[in-house]
Figure 1: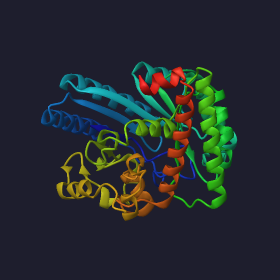
Figure 2 (figure 1 turned 60 degrees about the vertical axis):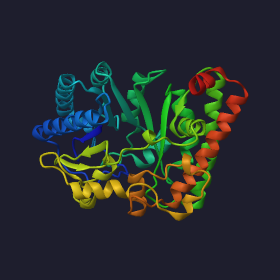
Figure 3 (figure 1 turned 180 degrees about the vertical axis):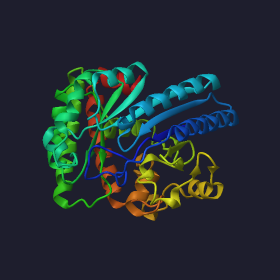
Length: 371
């Protein structure tokens, strides 16, 4: 089971596209954190025993900005690690942070404890400061980017998460060049699907994607391969003839998020401010799942859009992502047009990149995708 503890609704930034709801000084108590860990590990063991598989779990820390609750994060992780060892559960660990509170001491602790770190950084200053600002309006790029020096090179323990929005997409191509020049080797491009995309922004997006593909090819030719989610992921769907069941999110099934209150949601993107999503609240860690609501959500997941049924790209398309569907259409089984646009664009991009490097028999490419 993958479980995420949303440690706080507070944040020291005011990013314009944030989906985490209104910011408030409400944080998870130790009692809720402890019970959340117990609840999730118990479910992990039960599920593993039912399936006859080894018990494996991932604990993630999210917010708000989780590093505002640094001591709670450390305490909850230490408790989870001890409990997992006692129960025979293999425990992976992640944290997503806006980087502004990272310092050398915290980075070393995360590294020593085997954390995968998601670094929210929207590229260069021009792109990042467009939408990621402090409450007083100051851009946060300078405060956030200083942590990059600890993640240069081939360190697989971190990825930079870039949110692409119609208001900042004009800077995306330059930002990709800047990130690669800063030694970043793992980048996730996450579009803001929850807004309108005018035609000029779509054109900028297409051009930036093509430049990103060129940069990816150049890096492989130089023997310095990089990972970019929208390219790597779609290349793999080509090789596997689509997404496997295990590739898809376990929305409410083997993936849950727990709000500071202890309320259970099927994904951290759904938690928001924990007051507006009653329809998708699955229960509470103290009382357990609401069986009827959980069964309804599990049965409702997927994609019921008629036009998608006959699309040749459907096996390779993320039309099944329930949290994006919900945020864009209000229904977890309905896909928005902007998602369709994005998926067609990145599938074509990945196919161009993959065909080029495969045609050149690039050794690093063949090792990464065909070994």
